[in-house]
Length: 69
Image (cartoon, rainbow, N blue to C red; front, side, top):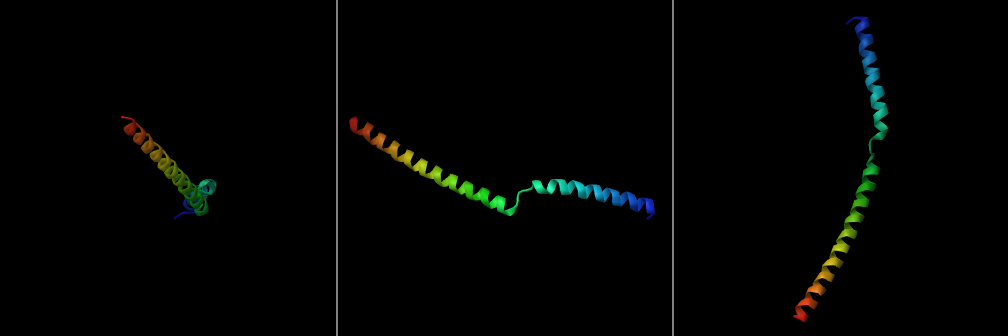
């Protein structure tokens, strides 16, 4: 391999590494993902509670409608 070819190769490698260094900080960390999952769990739990309350309300309305018939 000639010196020129090695210089080109090293320049290309340096440019690729620079691109990686610019992109890398934008990736989510393990802690970021854990916090996101925790937030989703909380949201799901609240949604389950809301769904349960809605189902109970609909059940009571059905009972009232059937009792009025």
